[in-house]
Structure formats: structure tokens, C-alpha cells
Image 1 (spheres, helix red, strand yellow):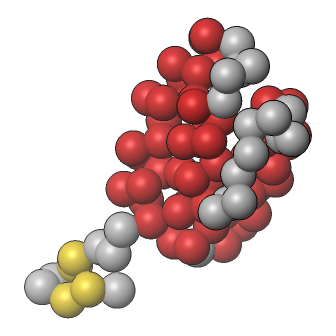
Image 2: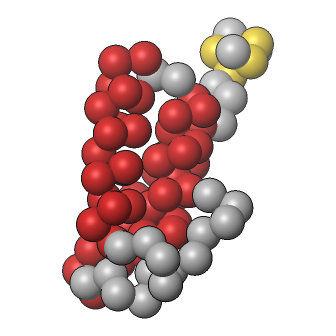
Length: 79
């Protein structure tokens, strides 16, 4: 979302995209999808029209999704 413009994007659109991405991540476990979720949560938490509760929740969850996108070390090897 490099061209993110809060004036053109509604919070509801971001939430719908996040739900879509989360659903596909649950099916695949793809770290790229996790990074997309993280970035969308970051945009949602910074959006000026996002409800404060949703903003705080998005900000809190963004780091966990970024962690899910990071390569995992198991037995000394990265996957």
C-alpha cells in the first residue's frame, strides 16, 4: 500500500481487506500474507477516521503479524 491516501480510503475498506488477508493466511500460512496483514493494520491504525478502539487494537496487533511474517529458525536453519 505504498500509495495509501487516507482521504480516499475508508476504514471499512481496510478492515474488509484485512479480514480477507487473514482468512487466506489461515489457509496457507504464507509469510507474505502475514506481512500484508501487518501493513494493512498499520494503515488502519494511522487512519484519521478509524475509531479509537479499532485504532488501538490495530496498532497492538500489527507487531504480532510482522513477527508472523519474519523467517523462523528451527534446528538452526531458516525456513
